[in-house]
Length: 195
Image (cartoon, rainbow, N blue to C red; front, side):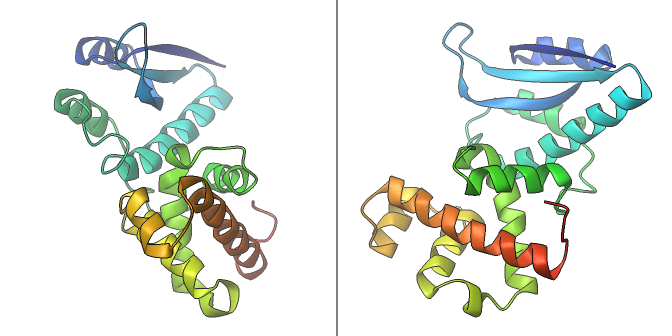
């Protein structure tokens, strides 16, 4: 249904695979030990089902990556960044997709790292604060942590100090709790059965 490739991302290799019809589906947060580059996974749909999957993966990568540019990929090579941005459809960047919902649920259950789902968490937090009575769902401290870390993208050590937490581990646990509460309320309020 589809073909996939994974390699250490350089502008030359990225151009080659883009010309071959492949689109980015995931970019590693850390540089690989072997290549010294961020590992990228690209896909090319070969059937209707494969094209649908490739499009979903590309959309999910787009929404995550647009958020991660100011965080995990702050120091990404600008030529590589330009090539990735030129290949993106940003129309759906602010909507929670089914893949967002899956990633959020996995984060809340400690099965995804914060850095890999930060874009989804940003959209969830913005949606929760705009659609829900958050004062009834989250404590003031949980609200402050979600807004400072996820929306404002403050340094995690700064958020730990601001909230009087013991360290980054407790910060992530507090984020998971606030995210879990938000997901439960949004499911019942808006998209029951879609997460």
